Image (cartoon, rainbow, N blue to C red; front, side, top):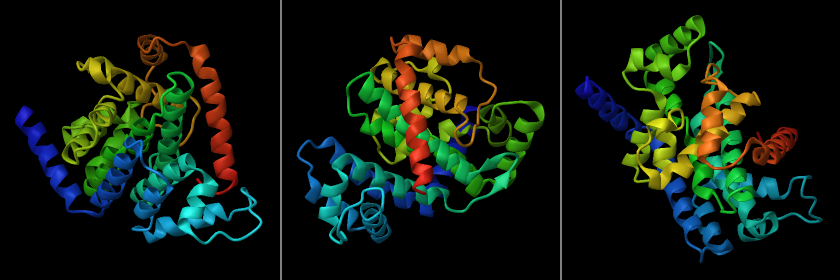
Length: 291
């Protein structure tokens, strides 16, 4: 059984690295390295962005949108970075690259890539807000983990269409969470796939473990990354409860959420401002057609 599990993950990694999905590895990895360097400035971010023409176009479009209301047209990337603010540009750059994964929409048994993208953005925002408002830390790695936490679902949709649709159908008909149904048809679930990809791409441990255990933080043995794993789990469940985007685990009771909150040594009251801000930001992004 263990051999089948390992062989399946090896097969999946090979498929991913030979596909367009692997194109996000370089840019996201470069942005992550820049985020971790306290010396990174607008000029450094400009150099990364200029390697990606669609990202350049998106950045300039955002800077020139009515929402920001600048009196003249901004045509220089570095000026756009300064005008929008470093934090806004980091999020935009990561979102634009990750969004490439969700381009080709499919709709089946309540699943669509667009709904999954909306959910992923919401989870990323929620992770960052928890880290900044409650733990007073930047939370940039957790933002990326939120964006990519369901990358395994994209992989299943792209490479294992029959098995994935069978899992979706079983989950819908038998009232199961998707990750429970996935194992019957693929021998692995999307969280395990996501963790294997992050490991192969040599992304930070806290991101890798958070993605791998976001549905089952109680299985985690590495206390060094416990806060990151629990934060992603809480953000994921909060977005499910707010009905934002695709919900792959509708049948998890609130025990998991309450236990994870307790293990973080915070309270549900601490999270209320986070949820309120999250909903406001999602509404703003939809209104501006950024989401």
